[in-house]
Image (tube, rainbow, N blue to C red; front, side, top):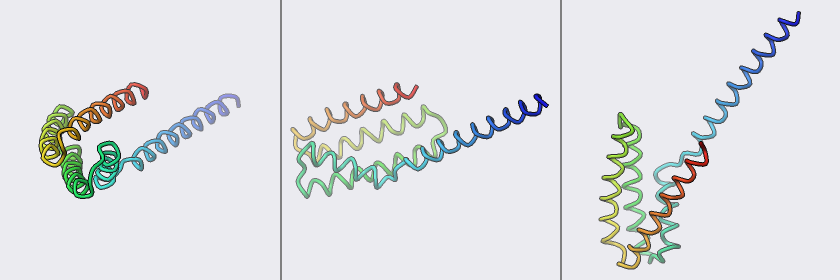
Length: 130
Protein backbone atom coordinates (compact mmCIF):
# COMPACT_ATOMS: atom_id res chain seq x y z
CA UNK A 1 0.00 0.00 0.00
CA UNK A 2 2.83 2.43 0.88
CA UNK A 3 4.53 1.58 -2.42
CA UNK A 4 1.42 2.49 -4.40
CA UNK A 5 1.10 5.82 -2.58
CA UNK A 6 4.78 6.53 -3.13
CA UNK A 7 4.55 5.70 -6.86
CA UNK A 8 1.45 7.88 -7.16
CA UNK A 9 3.26 10.75 -5.46
CA UNK A 10 6.27 10.36 -7.78
CA UNK A 11 4.04 10.31 -10.86
CA UNK A 12 2.15 13.36 -9.60
CA UNK A 13 5.42 15.23 -8.97
CA UNK A 14 6.58 14.36 -12.49
CA UNK A 15 3.32 15.60 -14.04
CA UNK A 16 3.49 18.84 -12.04
CA UNK A 17 7.12 19.36 -13.09
CA UNK A 18 6.19 18.88 -16.75
CA UNK A 19 3.35 21.38 -16.41
CA UNK A 20 5.63 23.91 -14.77
CA UNK A 21 8.29 23.59 -17.48
CA UNK A 22 5.76 23.83 -20.31
CA UNK A 23 4.16 26.90 -18.70
CA UNK A 24 7.55 28.61 -18.44
CA UNK A 25 8.38 27.79 -22.07
CA UNK A 26 5.02 29.12 -23.20
CA UNK A 27 5.56 32.33 -21.20
CA UNK A 28 9.00 32.82 -22.75
CA UNK A 29 7.57 32.32 -26.23
CA UNK A 30 4.87 34.92 -25.53
CA UNK A 31 7.55 37.40 -24.41
CA UNK A 32 9.33 37.27 -27.76
CA UNK A 33 8.48 40.48 -29.55
CA UNK A 34 7.91 40.93 -33.27
CA UNK A 35 10.48 42.80 -35.38
CA UNK A 36 8.02 45.71 -35.55
CA UNK A 37 7.68 45.83 -31.77
CA UNK A 38 11.45 45.64 -31.27
CA UNK A 39 12.07 48.36 -33.87
CA UNK A 40 9.43 50.60 -32.31
CA UNK A 41 10.79 50.14 -28.78
CA UNK A 42 14.37 50.83 -29.86
CA UNK A 43 13.40 53.85 -31.96
CA UNK A 44 11.34 55.28 -29.10
CA UNK A 45 14.33 54.88 -26.78
CA UNK A 46 16.59 56.53 -29.35
CA UNK A 47 14.12 59.42 -29.79
CA UNK A 48 14.21 60.05 -26.05
CA UNK A 49 17.93 59.53 -25.49
CA UNK A 50 19.20 61.15 -28.71
CA UNK A 51 16.53 63.83 -29.16
CA UNK A 52 15.61 62.70 -32.67
CA UNK A 53 13.64 65.04 -34.90
CA UNK A 54 10.42 63.75 -36.46
CA UNK A 55 12.21 63.21 -39.80
CA UNK A 56 15.04 61.36 -38.07
CA UNK A 57 12.54 59.25 -36.14
CA UNK A 58 10.93 57.97 -39.34
CA UNK A 59 14.30 57.19 -40.96
CA UNK A 60 15.68 55.54 -37.81
CA UNK A 61 12.52 53.44 -37.40
CA UNK A 62 12.80 52.22 -41.01
CA UNK A 63 16.46 51.26 -40.45
CA UNK A 64 15.72 49.54 -37.13
CA UNK A 65 12.82 47.62 -38.68
CA UNK A 66 14.91 46.53 -41.67
CA UNK A 67 17.60 45.05 -39.44
CA UNK A 68 15.16 43.61 -36.88
CA UNK A 69 13.58 41.64 -39.73
CA UNK A 70 17.00 40.52 -41.02
CA UNK A 71 18.02 39.40 -37.54
CA UNK A 72 14.75 37.51 -37.11
CA UNK A 73 15.49 35.59 -40.30
CA UNK A 74 19.05 34.92 -39.16
CA UNK A 75 17.80 33.38 -35.94
CA UNK A 76 15.32 31.21 -37.80
CA UNK A 77 17.64 30.04 -40.56
CA UNK A 78 21.18 29.96 -39.14
CA UNK A 79 22.45 26.48 -38.46
CA UNK A 80 24.82 27.20 -35.59
CA UNK A 81 25.36 29.75 -32.85
CA UNK A 82 28.58 30.90 -34.54
CA UNK A 83 26.71 31.45 -37.80
CA UNK A 84 24.07 33.52 -36.01
CA UNK A 85 26.72 35.64 -34.30
CA UNK A 86 28.50 36.24 -37.61
CA UNK A 87 25.27 37.30 -39.35
CA UNK A 88 24.17 39.53 -36.48
CA UNK A 89 27.57 41.20 -36.25
CA UNK A 90 27.59 41.98 -39.97
CA UNK A 91 24.01 43.24 -39.70
CA UNK A 92 24.94 45.49 -36.78
CA UNK A 93 27.86 47.01 -38.69
CA UNK A 94 25.68 47.74 -41.74
CA UNK A 95 22.97 49.21 -39.52
CA UNK A 96 25.49 51.47 -37.80
CA UNK A 97 26.65 52.79 -41.18
CA UNK A 98 23.08 53.61 -42.19
CA UNK A 99 22.38 55.30 -38.86
CA UNK A 100 25.58 57.32 -39.20
CA UNK A 101 24.04 58.90 -42.30
CA UNK A 102 20.88 59.93 -40.40
CA UNK A 103 22.24 60.98 -37.01
CA UNK A 104 24.39 63.99 -36.21
CA UNK A 105 27.94 63.30 -35.00
CA UNK A 106 26.88 64.02 -31.41
CA UNK A 107 23.81 61.76 -31.69
CA UNK A 108 25.89 58.98 -33.23
CA UNK A 109 28.41 59.17 -30.38
CA UNK A 110 25.56 58.97 -27.86
CA UNK A 111 24.07 56.07 -29.84
CA UNK A 112 27.35 54.13 -29.59
CA UNK A 113 27.38 54.65 -25.81
CA UNK A 114 23.71 53.65 -25.57
CA UNK A 115 24.39 50.52 -27.62
CA UNK A 116 27.34 49.56 -25.39
CA UNK A 117 25.16 50.03 -22.30
CA UNK A 118 22.40 47.85 -23.78
CA UNK A 119 24.94 45.10 -24.53
CA UNK A 120 26.24 45.27 -20.97
CA UNK A 121 22.70 45.09 -19.59
CA UNK A 122 21.96 42.05 -21.77
CA UNK A 123 25.13 40.30 -20.57
CA UNK A 124 24.20 41.00 -16.94
CA UNK A 125 20.68 39.70 -17.53
CA UNK A 126 22.09 36.45 -18.93
CA UNK A 127 24.52 36.10 -16.01
CA UNK A 128 21.72 36.62 -13.50
CA UNK A 129 19.59 33.90 -15.12
CA UNK A 130 22.30 31.29 -14.66
